[in-house]
Image (tube, rainbow, N blue to C red):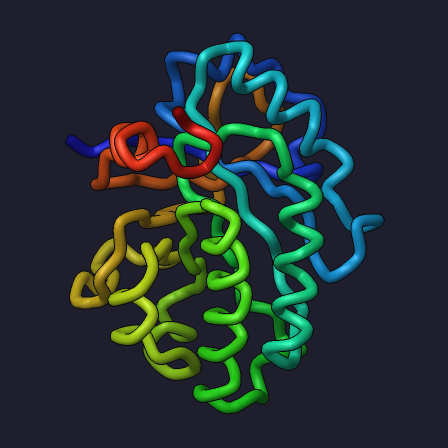
Amino acid sequence: MIRTGIDVSRHQGVIDWNKVKGNADFAIIRAGYGKSIKQKDPRFESNYAGATAAGIPVGAYWYSYAKTPAEAKQEALVCKQAIKGKRFEYPVYFDIEDKSQSGLSKQTLTAICKAFCEELEKAGYFVGVYANTDWFRNKLDHPALSKAYTIWLADYRTNYDKELKCDMHQYTSKGTVPGISGRVDMNTCTRNFPTIMRKAGLNGCK
């Protein structure tokens, strides 16, 4: 069964989650970015509260600026602080795509992803990596990462690269959904994450 959902951050402004309900099967909410708790997304708490109150299953993502595995671990520690005590039926994703990181080697960038994900896994979270096709093909060790973690692929082309293994596919940044003014990212998901989380007791799910 393919589910269709959205991912949101402060850029979507105030969201009417009751209107979103019925038009999105899930929502991946930005928790923050960088390695300071001051960089927690200012709309994370309200988005989480609104989505869960409306009965929409949620996941989270953390946008990275890390240049070393040590910095990625620090980002993970801050992410854990931001999401502590919350329940996620979908994974917590590490979002790696920033231009400031693009000159790093494939080995370093892959190690950065692993450092973040390992730290979150130790705390009982089901984690994944988000990037676009160019990054997964040319800048990251996709086979190694996809073996260890779930993959969220961004590719807006009609004939996108289906050989890249992924459970989540972000297929446009120009979606429209009732309850959200302006455009929103749209995604399809082919894996039943809510059942996985409940059975395994991960991400705060019992």
